[in-house]
Length: 166
Ligand SMILES: Cc1cc2nc3c(=O)[nH]c(=O)nc-3n(C[C@H](O)[C@H](O)[C@H](O)COP(=O)(O)O)c2cc1C
Image 1 (cartoon, rainbow, N blue to C red):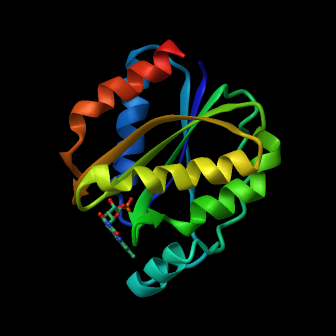
Image 2: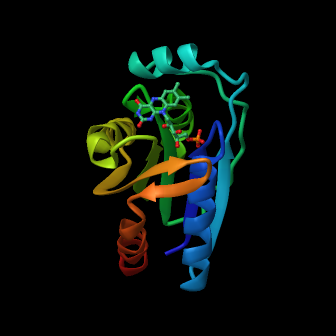
């Protein structure tokens, strides 16, 4: 299952998880590559939270990711105001048509209780499904602080297992 890991990270936590997943999948001999979505302008805390809350799109730097060869795409985002970061929506709506037929899974990072954010993961699923992209209900949601996992670490291996067995 060739896997692409697409993520946005404002302060490095989600990047840390993306890199950890990359390492774990490589150890399982999975062909994996990271793709980072980048903002045009780093939003301040309030603009970021407001845009996320309203599920607005915010502009991303144009990307030309070659995702053709991947069977599975993981989407990673921080939680902002209880929602996924707006750049994920921008990206999915921009390139959605080019990845129809691929499997997808979602991972999120946050700073409070991970269980609270299953609905946020489902919002990403909704963006994907609107673009006719298949997704699953297996989410990985981690509480982070300064690029360290505080809660949810025990779920990483299950998430990786779901990937390797699919
Ligand atoms: C604008 C903004 C809003 C946030 N809102 C929440 C929130 O509602 N719940 C939460 O648990 N964490 C919230 N956080 C914390 C981030 O989700 C958390 O630090 C995340 O791991 C950051 O990921 P990153 O370093 O990849 O950008 C918020 C952070 C920002 C910047």
